[in-house]
Image: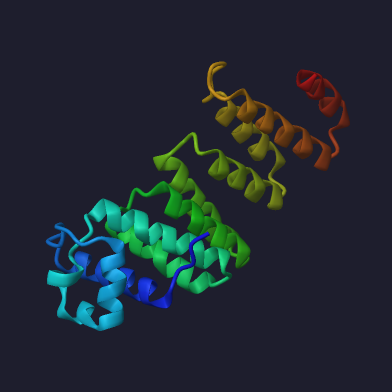
Length: 195
């Protein structure tokens, strides 16, 4: 697995700020290793002429990847900053909204987590991780009926051809919720669908 150097994080942060500040003028090309070299040599201080190498889409991908690596390294504040930079470039980036929801849940901010996961699902209704996170947030709040209704609504998005495994995952989540709220007769009834 590739480790993220501080120089790379700094270069990407600077380049995303420059891209936003220049209104997208920085759309011609240097690649990510060039950004690292620019940051290490101090050339990034020369502005968009050096750092302008990534397209907006490439910068989104790179910044998101940096955020994920920072998250994995336990650097949550830096990861949040990275995901926020992605959203400054692409406000509809569902995966960044999802990651912000994860960070908020980890910080104990259930309201922010729910807002972020709902935004993520607005842009990608079939994202299984976001669906499962919303179910978990509803379960944490002991909103059993809302969680069950959301599972049913989400599983309906997947057709028979679409990934049967995800449908079974939703059914497993449903059974766990029913069990948690003590609805054992429904657990037995719904559990037969797994057989």
